[in-house]
Length: 204
Image 1 (cartoon, rainbow, N blue to C red):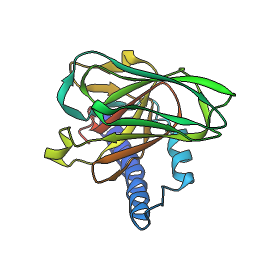
Image 2: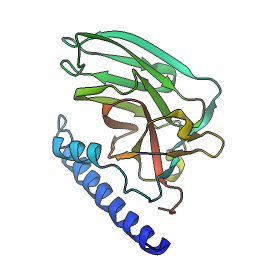
Image 3: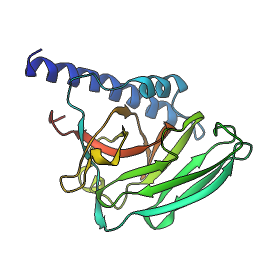
Image 4: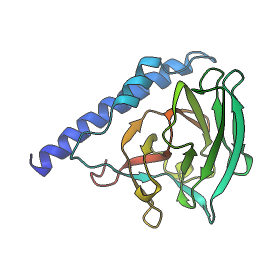
């Protein structure tokens, strides 16, 4: 397949995913309690990027660089769920009741160092019975200046993060909802996630 054909294929695929995300946002705005349809989340979660095509994304940049990893851990129960938060960076992970696949689990959220909005979650490889919600305040980022569309990217290993370039090689793409300055992603499994502004290799 030629590079032009690959680029056109990826662009078309990306427009379908982001178009579905736009519909979900519109539906959510119609009700204070509305959320994106479950079908969309399942489709995106299962929709690994096309093999052999560009996977590198540009991460959303913070106004201030995070110099060292910032971590929070909490023991949660399947019955009650709970949340983890790093208030200084306005990020919260919400775990609903019934999401954890065993009775108890210690969940860790780490903000990766650098200029982009990226996180590591543990235990790595955990698959949840219900989606977790990652809520990120994007006010203190370059999004305030550019107002670019945002989406989420899943990566298996921190070795896929190029902090110097502000780019991440991702394995899956996720739709995002944005209300005011709060962006939300539904996470079905761990390890790493990035808030992305586009595909770096294809100029999308």
